[in-house]
Image (cartoon, rainbow, N blue to C red; front, side, top):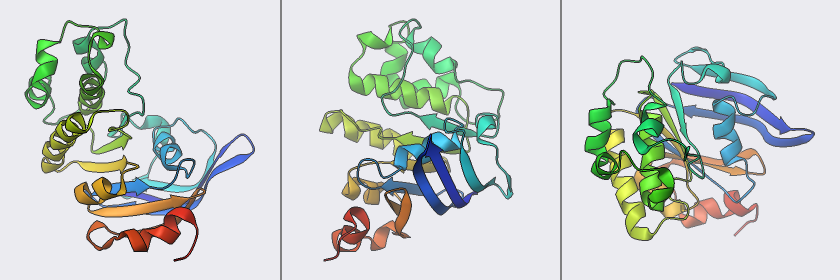
Amino acid sequence: MLQLDEVSAWYGQARALDAVTLTVETGQTHALVGANGAGKSTLLRLLCGLVPVYTGTITLNGKPYDPRKASADGVALVPEGRLLFDSLTVEENVILGARDRAGPWSLTALYALFPILSEKRHARPSDLSGGQQQMVAIARALATNPAVLLCDEIALGLAPAVVGDVYVALARVRAQGMTVLLVDQDIARACRVSTHVTCLLKGRVSHQAPAAGVTAQSLRAAYFGVAG
């Protein structure tokens, strides 16, 4: 479904991605892992048109893909840090992402996925807990009825119990056939929830494998760039 071929990207003169080749098949949950600064978030941002300078080829469903038209083409991002608008209510933040695309994620369905958001629909994001804010960010992305959902560190800064709730909801989303590309620094959790794992090291792909076959030993050199 989503194919990157020899994709490189820059921030000014600094190369953030270096000849990345990656395939995410329809219905897969594909995890990106790697140390801080490896290029994981850059890759997701690039796919949403937020990194304008890049080379290489990106295709979606076999057709050339323009990241600047991500939302129209069915690609949605749950950004690191959530980036909600506190001048809007919870419900206004969610429906901000709504597009005229066919799909299962109506406002009613989103409130069924996250019942607490229905209770808090008239509240401001700053009045919510961190976990509830993350639910708003996920619901906003799902409101676009995307074909591909990009999740950037959706567990960051959350209590373990809340992380569990967020990933239970993500499992329900995946059960709808959603294609998910997610960044998670917790390798064990990434492997549990994913079908495939790609490790990035200094902007390059250092390891790719089905999640079921990934071990701590097999990722050590890929993650840190050292042997043993």
